[in-house]
Image 1 (cartoon, helix red, strand yellow):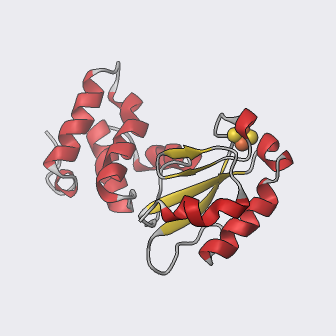
Image 2 (spheres, rainbow, N blue to C red):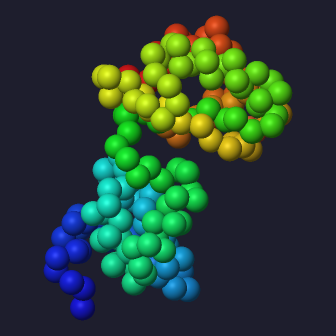
Length: 162
Ligand code: FES
């Protein structure tokens, strides 16, 4: 039986979705990333409190779950803006101008990497290869992959995200 102090941190909907994931998997720990993504979809990020509740629900240690979160950079362990902007900094994008592009994006948003705009609209983060190297440079805004990013088009690109 689950400990009452931990499980109520998660909503019924979150617990239900996590349990649905677990039902398809050989063991509950295999649902670690999906469970964190579920909570993140509901809350925008995964707090220490949420992490503890997820670990408890999956029957694993908080340390173990936290180490998985650390290696999976799509799990946000701090609050983020409404849209997370992830700029690829791997080799193909670097060769195609990711570094000057990053500077243009930082200037456009008025923030540096790891920061969130004052209006809470965008958080800017680096990310490793997004798997679209032939369309470098690339970035993601939320769940949208943007290819062949043109630094002169940033007004149009960011303007689409309210
Ligand atoms: S290196 Fe940027 S998408 Fe692969």
